[in-house]
Image 1 (cartoon, rainbow, N blue to C red):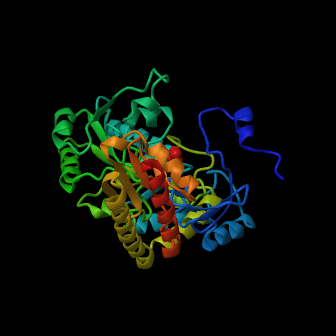
Image 2 (image 1 turned 30 degrees about the horizontal axis):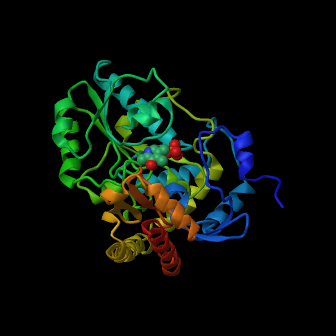
Image 3 (image 1 turned 90 degrees about the horizontal axis):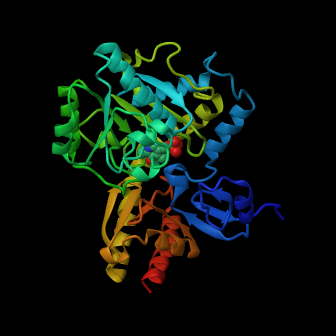
Length: 401
Ligand SMILES: *Cc1c(COP(=O)(O)O)cnc(C)c1O
């Protein structure tokens, strides 16, 4: 028997989280088990992180092999796993240069510092304004919450960094009114994740690109949640007609090992010259070895096409559930980033649905109080999908009563 329990959390942990009562202790594929031995299907995937499910043999093998070789050296040296991973990222995206960090927030922090520095190097110090979108989410450091568009994450932490403006997402006129030659960058998620799984129109995304070009502002795509096959393409920008200037990636990149990366072009990367930015662990051999293995598994037609097929299956089943229980206005998102928007009468009750589904044996997420979110493993089996959706249906039935 373990000496710790959920009650220990309240004794020894800072109360910024309010974890579920059950404590997961083991995972395999899309199944996890709690400390009492109860089994669950995992459609939460550690918040869109466990893209290959739990303990995928390829990841376990990469970690074990690297663990016997070299763990950490600092950026006083480079290392082979980091170079190999950077090569893969560069040859499969628009990017020509990579900076490694340890999380999505840190990758974004690097991006936001870089856009300022680049504008200063190439234009003028007055060109320092960042425009981002309401409901956007970019991490929890002071700079990234400030660029993020959700006040609940900045309240109490003022004074905030300046030079940041927000406009409505998927509203090109709103951006056109605010953008100017003082804008150094526009920052957006190609699909808003935490903000409610909002997929913008391609005309909006193309319009943002055009406005950035007109004002010599950089376009930053935060693909921390949408990247690495989540939407059925390697990166979500590949569904659009647009290429960003800077892109950040994390979450699924490490499949559960903490790693993040900022990708950009040669020209922009030049502004992050020696000594301007850094990280002790960024590009650490263990993380890069695991991410490299994850990348190779995901970046195959079988896995990426599989994402589309699994989405169809999920959507069909959710539509059938909805015909019975009448709880959702729409199913949205792309690939295996699935958002189910609650009808007016259930607004604010996403947590009740999540808890009820957990009781029935499946983990799901919310994206705000009005949207149920699922981000299952990209290699979830049909059997696991069916079991999880059965639990979801039972959970929904329970709440609807
Ligand atoms: C999760 C997330 C982040 C923050 O990543 P961390 O690894 O928690 O720092 C940033 N941007 C987006 C779009 C995210 O979904």
